[in-house]
Length: 389
Image 1 (cartoon, rainbow, N blue to C red):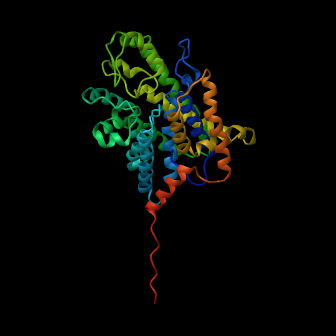
Image 2: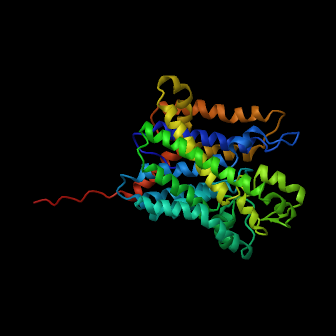
Image 3: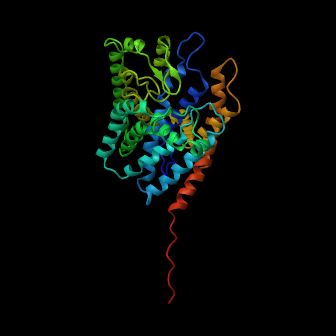
């Protein structure tokens, strides 16, 4: 949700647009249908869309700040603005698990990394994706229960410590783990994203990582007995309560709430959406990188791909505006009706059409424009006055 500067890379915007449409799908369409089967929307997008948002935010952060004179100041201002919007959305009662307050913290955590060498970004990404979940599993039993409602200004005043722990460790998008997504995206952003070879490598490497992570999870949970161990464990879902054995399969399919139960180490073997377990984080990093590679390649097909790429890129160039509007709309009226697919189309068709029309004006999205103006103002230095003779 960082606005890119001039000379936008249309494939990056298209990937961001696809990620937003995936998130909208998981917000509007239930995880299971009437027969108890996982819906296509959740099978494809659950966990992956939000992770792609974070990885692509890292890519955009690198692109935006690479030539900025004061990258840390402007990024901090953007973080404050995004956090404020997120905390306001928390007051609306939206059913969406609002990611913006977490995003704000992601950006603050990324401030020391803006000019860091590539090897530092790689170490931070690997540590957050692989080591942080293990440390979290040890620490979380000694921490307060997470806030199960969206963070808001009320929480900032009433329970700032619990809010801090929720955003950093125990919430839906724990920042100390998700900074791995952002760091991976920042590393990818250092590559030549206009190169067809790089795009192909991103697609292939991302897909390979995703498949390897899921395959390892299947091996650990199946042949090596992890699923049976989870069925036998007396696990407690953080912020929710005890898990009955019969609920374990649906949780493994449908997803968790940002962290794993701490009663069994086997939970760290899952690649369940929003588990923030190592294999979940690796799998979704891989799918995000593969999505970017695919979007970059499709964008190179020229006019034949314009009908797909242009609307997605238009949405992706103003994701903060559309995400905020989407979350607010769902706070005014919960989805109703027989066809969730139709409800989804009611959300995304206006997005695609209006965003495409807006893109023709050459302007930033409304919220993106306001935040960019504030960031520029924060770093503006008036020219020195010339002394008269």
